[in-house]
Amino acid sequence: MKKIFIFLILFFGTTHNLNAEIKRIVSGNENAKITIIAYESLTCSHCANFHKDIYPQLKKEYIDTGLAKIEFRHFPLDIAAFNASKIVQCKQDQSLKILESLYSNQQTWIKGNSIEEINKSLREFIEKEGFKVDFEKCINNKEIEDFVLNDRIEGTKNFKVNATPTIIINNKKFEKSLNYKNLKKTLEKLI
Image (cartoon, rainbow, N blue to C red; front, side, top):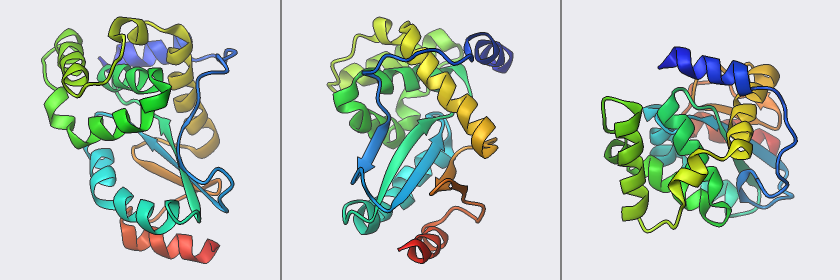
């Protein structure tokens, strides 16, 4: 499956004009002094842990207070994460809610021995959660596909991202062990 995914990146990974309606998933004050970028893969257990253990505190102390904003960027590590990213990005008015739901319930929808089985689990999960998504249209949308792949390419090129989650703070890669204490120390220096 990794070989197929690498082929997709190489084949589709050139920069294209993106539909102006495709927007980044951002939480927080657009004009915040601190910009946090999180490169993530929806099938990554460490990313799910980030959303469970670190993001709520980060949101409470820095994002909701207007000190920082966080931008979630796609860095799919496999075809299942790639398809899930397309679903998240497809429903602009609910992207953050879908993203959070997929991370909170990761083990529920990452089921199957083939991409077809995993897609079926993903589709059933999205429907069960009540998100109104045209699954096939989203999975096959070329502009969204390019948007997701370009996130990955830009992450690799601009920040040397090679694992998930990778955190970028004001355009500098966060190199310490990813826990709230270390993150807070770094953020406090920027306020």
